[in-house]
Length: 329
Image (cartoon, rainbow, N blue to C red; front, side, top):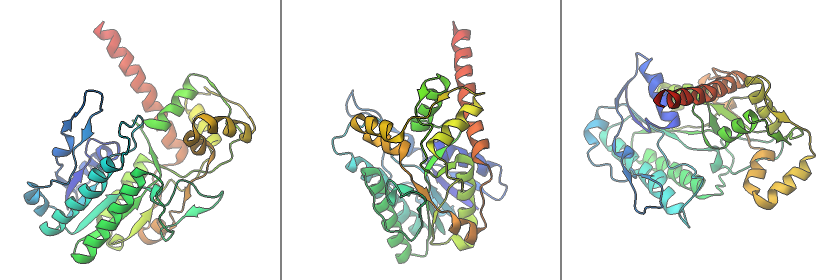
C-alpha cells in the first residue's frame, strides 16, 4: 500500500511515519514539503503553516498512492495573534483539507483518512456521559468549527466520487514530546508545587500517541472502516487527580497533590482562567465501543505505561539538553 502522509514533522505524523517504516506492507511514497514552508507577515507574528488549498504539483504523487492520511492542521495557538482566528483555521483545516481531498479523489486515491477532533461534539460532557459517533455536532471555537466543516466537505466529496473517507475524532493526545497543557502539568509536578486537585473527581478521555497511531494504521487498511467515523481513546477515563498521581508516580513520588474543595479552586480559577478551570475540573468523555466492535481494535498501551513513557522522555530530554549546554560551554 502506497501512502501520501501530511504532517510528517508533527506530533502525530512523525510517530505515524515511524510506524509505517516498520510495516512491510506500507510504503510512504510522499510527504508534501510545502506544508513545512513558513511565512512571517509581521515581525511580531509567529510562523504559520501554509494552507493546502494550493495543491498543484501533487497530482503525480497522489496518483501513485492508495491512501492519503491527513494529520497536518493548524492546532490551538496558546498566544493567538489574530483577533478573529477563524479565517486562519479555515484556510488550513477546512479549505486546505477539501482541496487535498478533491485532488486525491481526482487522482484515483482509494481512501482518505482524516484526523479530526472530539471537540466537534463540544467541550464537555455531564459526569459519566460519553460522546458517541451519532451524537450531534456542536463545535464551540474556531478550531473545532474548522474541523467540523472539513468533515462535512470530506463527506460531500466521498458521496460525489469513489474515494472512501475515514474520520477519526480523538481527545487530547499525549506521549513522548507532548506540549501544551500536558507538558505544563508535568512541570507542575516536577517542581513540587502544591497542587490543590486531590478531590477533582471529573472524568476525561485521553489517548496515548501509540494508541492513536495504531488505530490510524488500522483505518488505513480495514475494509469495514470505509466511509465511517470513529471516536477513539485509551478506553480508561481518568480524573485530574488520577492523572497528576500517575505523573507523580512516574517521577518517583514527586509532587504534592493536596485535597482542597473543588468548588473553592474552581471558583477562584474561573475568575482569572475560566478555560483552564473547565479543563481541570470538567468532564469530557467518549466511547470507543464502535472502534472495538467494528474493527476489533484495542489500545496497545495502558494509561499508566503511556504516562510513564511520556514522563521519562520529558526528563531525559531535559537531561540531554543540559548535557549539551554543558558540553558546549
